[in-house]
Length: 106
Image (cartoon, rainbow, N blue to C red; front, side):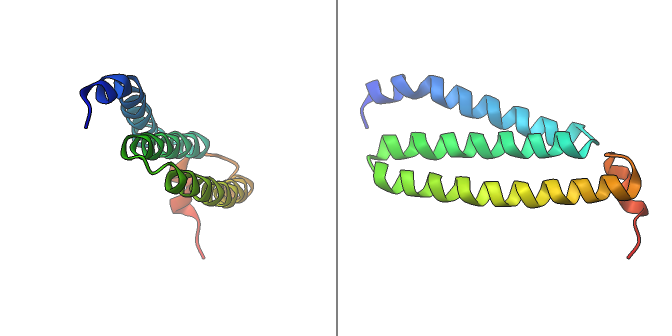
């Protein structure tokens, strides 16, 4: 692998690591369900960017594009379902606090 390629990719890797840390921190710290969904979105964007960078370095851009498009479609479906669950929880409990989920019974 060429040293110049690695030197050109360090800003992208810094961005991936930063996004991953922000998303993970958002998931750990918050009790709000909407903020948790935003943290999951940020984590998924970091992983998507990492896949794009790895595809660029390895030279498999066609495979990378297909993986990223598939991942975006799956992400959209999962987030849509998660938002529906959050709306249902909000209607039932009147709050977006994740501690209120424990009070729900069958």
